[in-house]
Image 1 (cartoon, rainbow, N blue to C red):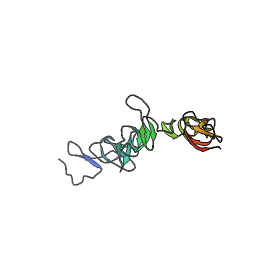
Image 2 (cartoon, helix red, strand yellow; image 1 turned 60 degrees about the horizontal axis):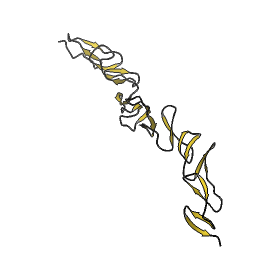
Image 3 (tube, rainbow, N blue to C red; image 1 turned 135 degrees about the vertical axis):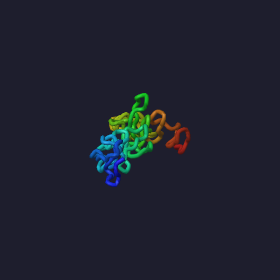
Image 4 (cartoon, rainbow, N blue to C red; image 1 turned 90 degrees about the horizontal axis):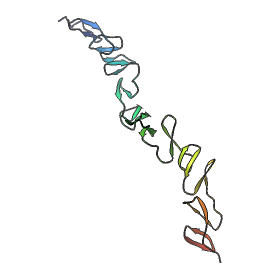
Length: 187
């Protein structure tokens, strides 16, 4: 075997004991090619023996090394399921949707799936929507209209019926009521 005293960190030793310079992307290596790196020169990122210009989709950089994202993430900032920046499909090719850095099967209440597989909020006082301008179900005391959800305003002697999003008459001779209860009888 050759003399190792002249061996530099950016060199590898071949089977004959000879020192050779690593590929230009490698700081340390075990062979001549760009896929035989042990560490990478800055600004490259180490990814399974290869020194990449960026970590590929599905991986994130930590201290110059590429690590896999959580399986629900397409792109991420860390390995946990709450570090997603975009979502991948599940194994059945169903879309996942990004909400608060987590990829979910569905968007939560008061949110809808938008372009880019992200969950965006419905308009104010809307519980179920298909877009920011189309509300399917408004919060109690509101009803859908072309502008979003409008508050239900009942006249004196009426009370809002949340089941039908309409005003119903209080009992006979009643000025004010709570659904089913007499509050103030007119004398």
